[in-house]
Image 1 (cartoon, helix red, strand yellow):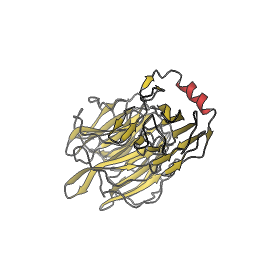
Image 2: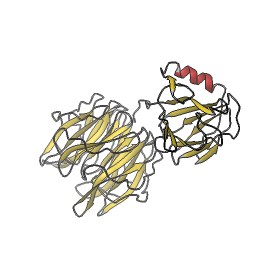
Image 3: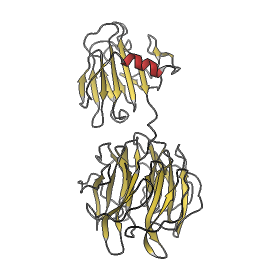
Image 4: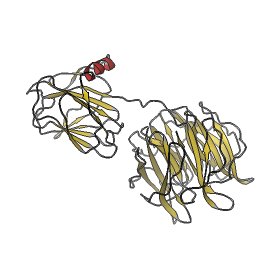
Length: 439
C-alpha cells in the first residue's frame, strides 16, 4: 500500500495476502496460505456475469470478474453496509495495468479514510477482496493479490506472409506446423505489400500491419487462431514500412519504429489490444530507425533492437506496453534482420546485413538482456522473417541471399536457442515479408 498522495489514495497489489492494521499498513505479509485463504473466502461469494462497462454498482456478497479490455471501470460500493459484508473483484483479462479500476466508497470510509479520496487499483492479474468493518474503518482490503506470472504457454503454429518476389509484390502466405514444417503457398488475402511487420495478440491470434504497396500504408490484416488471414482493416497510425512488431502483456501486441519516406525514420508505436484493435500513435521513445526487429521475452514483455542507421541499440517493452529509452547495443550492429521467441520466455535476433550479409544470432534472456554474437549457422542473408512454433521453438525463413537473390529456405530454432542448418525451400522465394504465430 502506498498511502495517500495528494488527494488520491493509490493502491497497488503486492502479490501477497496482508492483514491490515487501522492505519492501512500491512501487519504481516508472508504470503503463506494465500490460496487457502482465498478459497475459504470465495466459497461464500455469489459470482456474477463478467463486467465490461465503464461503471458498475457492487452488492455485498457478490464476486465480479471485471474486464477492462476496452475501458477503465469505476465501481461504486453499497451506500450502507454491515460488519462482515464482503465483495471480491478480479481482473478478468489481466488488463488493469492498462485500464484500471476506481473504487467509489459511496459515502462510507475506505481504510479509515473518508470519501474524499480517489482509490485506484492498476495491477494486471489482480484480485481484490474488501470487507466492511465498521463506520470508523469502513471498507478494508483483506486480499489484494496480483498473480504476477502469466501461465507459461506459447503458440503452436506460425505463418509467413506477404513480401517481394522476383516478379511481384505478394500477399501469399505459408503456414508453419507445430513441428516446424512450412507448407506450400496459400493464395493471398489483403493488399499485396512488402516491408510490413507481424506479431501476436489475444493469446492465440496474429496480425500483419503497415508496409509498402507502392506507397507506405497503415492497413492491417488479422490472422485467426487457425491461421486464416482476414481482409484489410482501415489504417490507424502513421503510414510506414520497415518497422517491427512483437507481443507484450501475454495477449497484446505492439508495432514500432519504421520509415515514412523522404529519408525520415520514426520511433512512434501503436499498441494492439487483446481483441486485435490497433491504437493511434504513441509518441516515440528511443532512436528513430527502420529495418529493425522485435520479439518477446520474459513471458509478457518485448524488445526492439538493431536497425538503420546501422546500430545495435535496443528498447525494452514492459508488460503494459511502455517502451523504454535506448539500451546500449550488444552484438554486431546490423539491419534487415529477424527475431522471434523460443523456450517460452526468451528471444533471438538473427541474420541481417552490416553491409555484408550475415547469419550471426544474439540470444535474449528472460530478463531482456541481449547476448554477444553467436557464430552464424545457415546461409547468410537479410530481409528475413521469423516467428514461434511448437509453443517453445522458433523459425527463421525466406530473405535475400547475395549469391542467388530471394530465397525460401528456413532455419529452425530449438527450445534452447540453437539454430539449425538450412531446410530446403517450400513456397515462393521472397524477401521483406513478415511472420507471426497463432494457435
